[in-house]
Image (cartoon, rainbow, N blue to C red; front, side):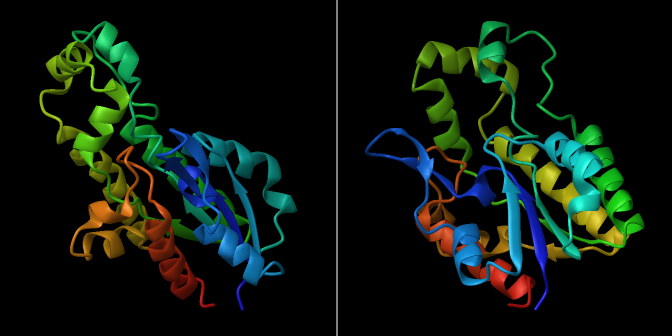
Length: 225
């Protein structure tokens, strides 16, 4: 069985939005927690809520020699492609950039892959789960029409959120092909359901418990467990 070190953001960490408490919390039976409980000698992880690929880049630069596992799994992009929506609402006529511009996201991913390969490690890249633009828009605007209208002055249309996110997912595939990396395609199982929105939290971006189960099944197969 392969030994794998997991680097990821809140999706890997198992964060969901609790509709009762109206806040983020840890999913009791998340994909990674299940893997850790079933295969503690094979799976190790370093996940962080809100992390971008810069976190992975810095972690690899500082800690690569201490990673004993032969495989490094990376799941990033959801936070990288996001914007500072309050800043956009405050000035919708300004040129706003995402947390990690697309070219910087791709460059960081390539540098991580190259550094890991030079250290005789193999990278497994994860795709990004799909999001619901409208739910997410409602969530970060808190259904404030004035705020939403100001953001739409800049955004033009709500569906541009998911289109922009998809461009980051495309970068993952591009680099996977370029560097011959294995891919954990956690995105496709959502899209292949009758209604993938049933597998996403009301915030529009985090997989819910059912979504975490989809991811678990994909990772289990990808990791040859």
